[in-house]
Length: 219
Image 1 (spheres, rainbow, N blue to C red):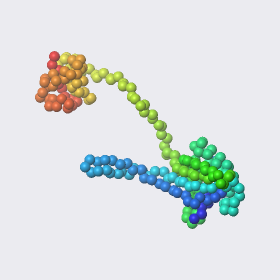
Image 2 (cartoon, rainbow, N blue to C red):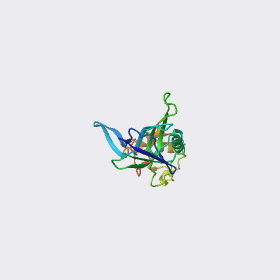
Image 3 (cartoon, rainbow, N blue to C red):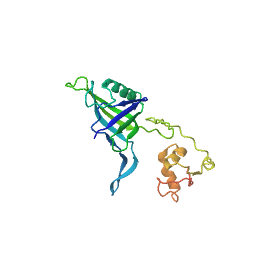
Image 4 (cartoon, rainbow, N blue to C red):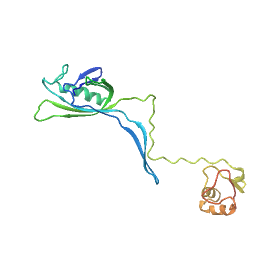
């Protein structure tokens, strides 16, 4: 099957002098895998990834009978245009047709470009290209860089509790632990059992206290 292949770069159309033997077009589905206890591994489809395209072609340095009409025997011309677009991160238009099905015309980024020269074919060059479909986001996004290490921020002092000021009771706030309460009143978190003993009717498990509970604070 013969293809007519073009690359439109910066408004100029470059017809490949020799058609690739094949053009590979691929789309993958992004899938996340999870391990579920007692059920084994499961897969969850997320989204279809962008199309990718790849092919290889010959760039003769002089006219040969199998070259496409309208193309040029000038390998460096093609290579300069392709590598410049890749270097400047510019999308190009990939266009190809086999004369039987619908033409393909898609905006792509040049992901990789490999140039090969063979000792027995001086001047000729072989090009292997891979492309990724170019698609811009519909909305503007701002990338947020998360620092590797987060500097601990000073804790905001809790608002004064009238009961605490009297030294008799304390109402549990969100984020409190018995260790934290003991450190606040006694200066030593390891003295939390003293609070547990004074509130045995309310504290069944020292690891489980809830906002809104009011504890007696023994002297």
